[in-house]
Amino acid sequence: MPEDNIDEALSAKSRMKMKQAFKKSAAKRKIGMKKSAKKLKNPEKLKKTAMKKARDMVAKKIMKGKDKSDMSFAQRQSLEKKLNKKKGAIAKLAKKIKGKVKMDDKERVKKARAKG
Image (cartoon, rainbow, N blue to C red; front, side, top):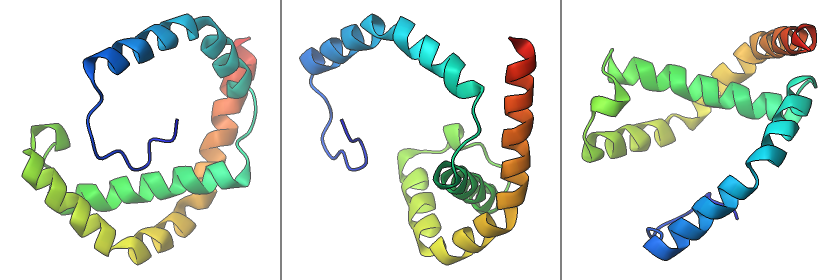
């Protein structure tokens, strides 16, 4: 179920249905997570991770030390608008930190493989 653009809230019934499905698949997801922890991310996923980190870095700069969870809904909305205006800067920063993200991924895999 793609959750990129959800405009309306889920009903209580569908929320309960999703909860049951999530509980039912918990064991399979756990096994899958263990397997994927031992694999390096593909370049597309690395790019996505770099974009998320870059976006977080820019957001932190805009928020000036405030915690996002303490912000009101309107403040978070205005933050999102500001971040959407800075897509170019975020992309440039993501490109810059991609090497670090790749190194972090290698370290993560190394730890996962050593663990078991």
